[in-house]
Image (cartoon, rainbow, N blue to C red; front, side):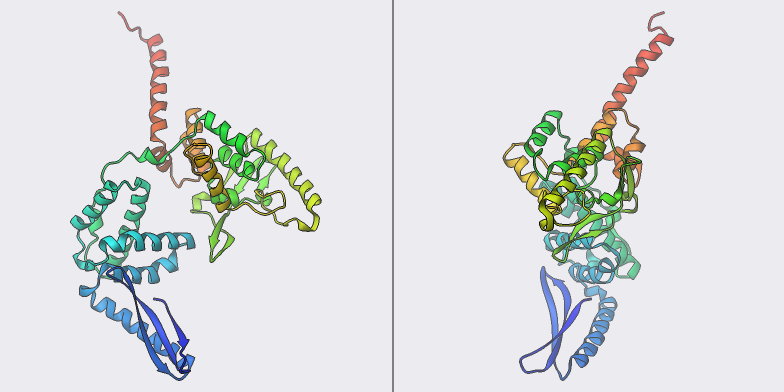
Length: 377
């Protein structure tokens, strides 16, 4: 639970701490009249401890919104990464609390939750987005069970409505790729576009790539970090998951492209002199300024509005993976290149491709077996 102290105009000190969200509105408690900052801080720590004890002891009257605030402070902020915390807080504020926050946590049953998710699906939210909300609620109630707030997790009885998971998977055609490339071939967007198209790297991985992690001798790219926006600045962070930390072999095309681009960077460094932004990033502008994820959002806007092509930078990842599978590359190899934690994720995400591969495989097998066993007696 978060809190802070402050000095009032009267020169007295007070403390403030969050009580959570009640009926969708953020509530705080403030107590003043302390002679010193230290006195206020001590009183605040005691008050927070007593309040949290009270939450656990009186969970019969605890709303789900109040519990979520407790869970965010005592679990999410401690155990999860910054961007995950930001995402959780946004989805809790925008969806979960408005829809479920007013219910007492011990009255939250599977019928209420089932109706909540059915409404989200009917409101045309993507399956990926609904799955994200599902994971947050399920995770929060699993922890509530461990902490003794509830006797069971009603999410175990909730079934998400059937939906085509591949609605979120968009694959660019060869014609669309050419149109996009020609539009950006003379801009700072060219290199990140080609890296993603040739490796399936995520946008944060592309922007976080440094020359230190490009091994031209072995033709390998080492994906060990990402570029993330935290506390109003761009910083290097760890990869999304443990399996996301990986090495990817460069195609001959990408190898030669990056070789040439590094030479161009060195020429620009000489040309700009003291005005060059010194760093080790692969993706930069002519003056060395690093390309970040917001820079690539501009690329997406241009492709959508000027070129009239439905596009998100992540579509390059889908396009790479789909092309690899269609070319007959084993799904296990594709999984390792993409950094999926298991092959099931790869096969489920690109099931439409694997179905086509089955059809092609059966066609080849049919031709083979017909030569072994005649179709007619």
